[in-house]
Image (cartoon, rainbow over all chains, first blue to last red; front, side, top):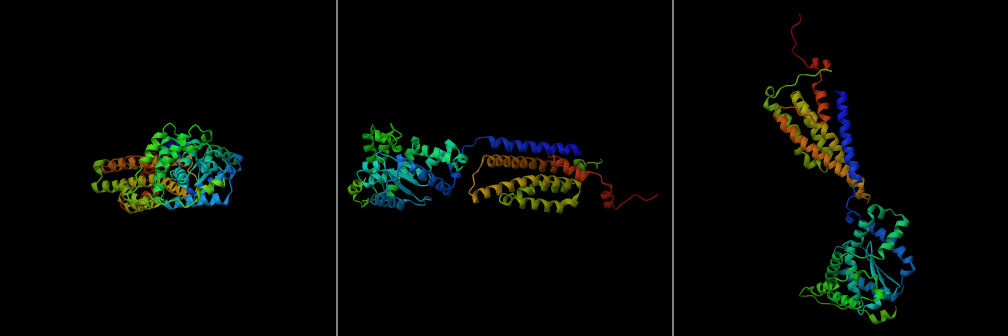
Length: 258
Length: 161
């Protein structure tokens, strides 16, 4: 009897041990929601520091430009409800027309993009679009999908270096771009900025589609579906009592600083 | 090793069968508190055993089988709750070992649930149903003839010569 009890015990331990082992080796689709905002912010800081060390993304330090970006950023953050992110907008010195999102609420904007925008509202629409990627955790989803949470959070300097390379050439799928567009439209409306400015900006970008300076710009990565996005942005209907308030900045002077 | 003879279904009173069945169903009654606090489930099972152990070997067997099988399930559930809390509080990653453990614990609970239902139904019919390992342990503990224990409980003895 005792031998038979022992055998049963071994069978039980073996079966359940195997279940644990087998399902540990199984590859699970990882959910970026499992990474806390605090951890994402810590990672983001490390990535931004490394990106800014790259001569191609050298930080552009100019008080007037910084303060203008802060004014636009504050207006947009004022329209956000229940965001867990502390946004940081960094301008980098590059003639490329570019802006991209780094995990943790970091948005990098090129001087080329600032120069390309004819109004601060146009720049606000790009920033709102990038904030959409942040809030929807699109960058993190992509990184988690490509690298997995464990590698991503390893803190290894080599890995961080590789990740920064991925971040500066990020492109999203069509669905994610459309989500970010819709988010931007709502955010612009909440921030008392005309939401259809996004369509104006898209149209201008479409006209310049063959411009070499735009080849890394993530916002146009869904070409040739760009027309659809212009139509969607134009068809966005703000509330009846919506009233746009201009962003009080001397935009020509700001652009003159670049 | 000798064992007491097992009673047949028609030799067991209905009340005794119901008490034996209760050992398994009691687990469902306490499952509401057992999910966040798994140890309370086990405490309830232990109380049920001590309250009902005097109702005969048939009841004793089923309550012990239910109690013993609940111990590892409770420990596994406690481990899962603790691991989850530690991950959240310490802002740690949910590793593949965690997910593997989660699946294993879920499987253990499911198996325990199914076996408990079958055990309850069989007990109500006055039938012995042995869980793997735990059934044999409970049977061994309850039905093994131990002269020192069994003679102490015998009050009526045949007349001396």
